[in-house]
Image (cartoon, rainbow, N blue to C red; front, top):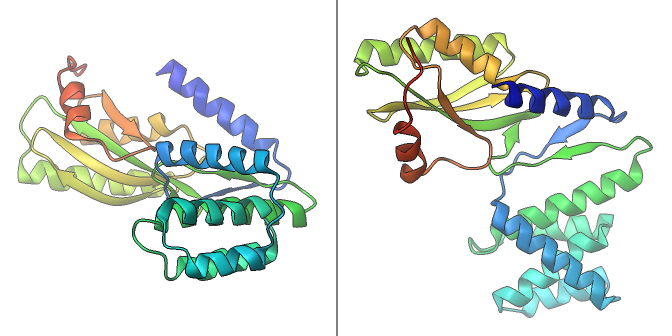
Length: 236
């Protein structure tokens, strides 16, 4: 817990150094997709292409190969101009399911570049696997109990976490009873110590174990939580 606290305190200190503030990117992006996108951008830089936005737009209208389309879309992100941004915004409206995440990632990168060029004070942009909303980061959190979850306990846990999150300027988006654990999807601001907020909710419930699973990168898989459930409970 001390390591997690230090991490959040360091993050807040870093954000405080940004004179222009920061924005949380609403769309979440798979880490593997981001890695591949960054590699594509590096490859584009090495090619030193002088393609214009107009030329790329014409190619997008006629090309059907997904891999080639991804390269053209990434080129627009790399150009990072207002015309490139408008082209990506238009393309997003009709992008196929296979391309939509790539287009949104490119659009995000392009918008960051445009805004950074236009503003005197730099803005910090925060992106995670789960994205966010209203400048808050989205998390999945799982909490378990030594005793079985009754209907009354599930309802009580929902009410307590809803109230705690509201007090900490967060938001409870959903809660699911998964049998062996409760799975929460929540939004939390960056100016708080997240584990402290969650621990307060756990303490208010009175029946949840102090050990919880938390991630802002992805919704946990069954394997993730099965491994976590095998850990020894810490409740007294």
